[in-house]
Image 1 (cartoon, rainbow, N blue to C red):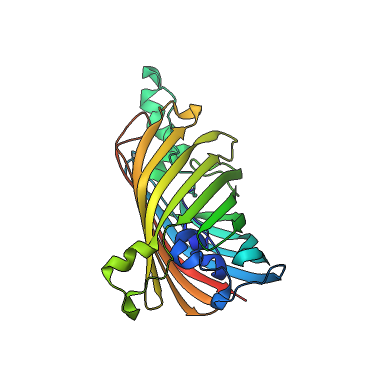
Image 2: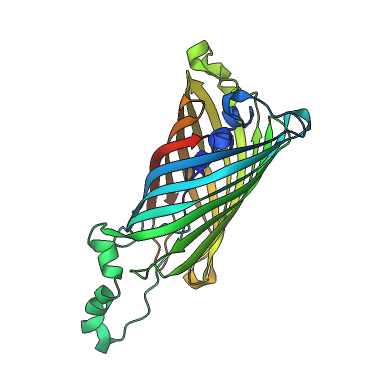
Length: 326
C-alpha cells in the first residue's frame, strides 16, 4: 500500500500527528523535535495527545494493463504517547484507526500484479464474460465507481535519540470488508522499518533571508524497507528505498523533496525477477495553528522492466489532507 502516516505524509501520507508530522517526511523540521509549538519534553516527562487525520488520496498504475486506479477518503482517529529522553531525545508510540471510503480498487502494496490463469482455446469465447463476472474487467475499465467502506490502521514506534537521527517501526493493517474484483475480504498487512539521518541542522527558511547555499543544512538520508501481504495471506514481496532528500521552509510552509532507487523483490506468486525501480516524492506541510496542519504529497515511481502482469512505465500516488492534535 503506497501510503504514509500523516507525516510521511506517506503514503503521506497516511497519518502522523502534529509533533511527528515532520518526522518521517521532513527531518529538517521533524528532527528539531516532535512536540507542538517546538516544546521539548524533559527527560522522564510523558505526554498523550489525541490526533485526527482526514485525507483524500489516489493511485494511478499506468504501467499495468487497463491502468487500474484506486481512490480513498480516510478518517483516522487515535493518539500519540510520547516520552522525553536524555539529550533532547524522545520515544513515541502512535496508533490510529478509522474508515476508508474506497473508489475503484482498494489500496495495496506497491508492485502487486494480477496474473491471469492460462485460457485454453475452447474457453476463449467465454473468457471475457467470465472475467467481467469476476469483477476484474469492471474494476480496470469501467472507471472508478464507489465500492465500499474498508477499515485501515496505523501503528508506529519511533525512537529519536537526538535532533539528527530517527528510527521507526511501522505497521499498516488494512481490512477489506467485501469481495469485489481483485479485493478479497480479510486483513492486508504492511510492515516498514525506516532510519533517517539529518546531515545539516535543518534550519533553512528562505523567507528569513537564507540563500540557496544554505540548502545543505536541510539535506538528509533515508533508508526504508517495506514488506507486504495480501488479505489472502499471499506474500507480495518487499522493497528498499535508499533515498536522498532535502527539507526547507518558505515562511511556515515546509517543503520536502526526496528521490532515489527502489530495490524491489517480488513474492514468488508473481513469477517476476528482482528489479530496480526509481522514484521520488514531494511533500508539503503548512500549519494553520499549533494544533492544525495541512499536508499534501506526490510520489511518482518508474519501472524500466516488464514481465507478465507488470509493464514498463509510471505509477503515481498523490493525496492531501489535514491533521489535528488536541
